[in-house]
Length: 479
Image (cartoon, rainbow, N blue to C red; front, side, top):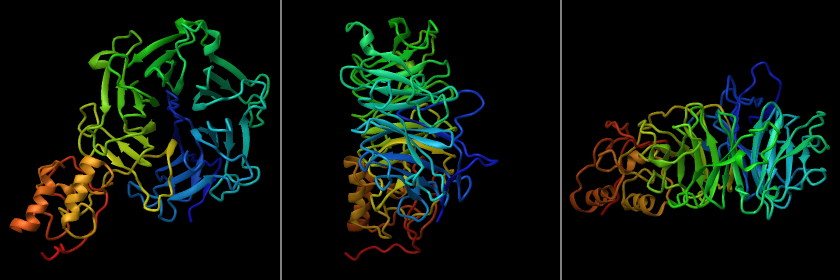
């Protein structure tokens, strides 16, 4: 078994972390999250599971480009109620913090926990492996509904809390090195909606945060479907005037964002915002220097319901070093890899949205936040049988039904889109199940290669095949 061990090794592993938004340390390096694994350079994630109230670790142990949760060495429980520590209620955000992991709980716990696997057993459930970093025992404000974490500078942790009648953004810093931020001098209120007159309290429902390359703090407002830009203009250490809190993007009129849930920023300054209700992901950038994103050029629909797999409940996302995204979908209990293969600035084409998690035993509940290490394995050629869309080794009517389910219901999770392209036109659409049924019950004409034997797709297209049933001969059921 592969064990997870935190260590101060000579070759620390670098993690890129997201609470409800990316912490991006613009400059020479990202936040260093030193996690030593039994197998070096494996792509892995630490994920909060909000429906099962635990934190898990997923590792691409076999370098296949996907995680199979039921495969030994690819799924670990990092923290759950078997610990003597506080039981998680609704873990909403994660953040890498030195050699540890910060877990923000936005349910009944309303606390920030610090976890570290000290004994190398792959979890942080043991004695001395957890402590409360911030909770209501602090002299600072009590957390109500905290939902987002971001790290600023060397050691300052920002928390967004959209609770009830008061919206807050707090800054925490462990000044004395005790692994907590409970002291009088270890918290600051950066933003308090109650300090503004009601008519001018612009930011009322902060949901996700991300630091931009310009040093500004970008925050989504879930109730207004907007993104705000916060800048400390007077160098007072907080955001206490309306001039310091300006509207960066508003969906008013367009209604594109009903409930912006996730936010991340890439190295080129593009903001990616997810909408929990629709699965939409917007791509925003201020191109004319007015500190706003508006118009068709500055506001693009990166993913919508027409995209492959039709994302539905996008909880969180993070950007990889190659510019691709990792997106969590709470309705599908799935983790997607999203990349702009055709370089058109969008991810709406076949093969640009791929499921990364294979979880037959349903070990993963509802992924809500993620910390990512390493890079995804480059796509590898997989042999398949054309028409065998459900990957059971046969071409039959169930394949046609599976394609229809995938296209119109979104329940079927395909592992090989290429196999469903029955007419080999480079697209997966309604004509493909018709071709399969015509082959089975009318003409018996063979489908395009590879058909009689498994093989690679001879046609270059954007359809992806991650895994398939490999057989030397197609078994066609008797009529």
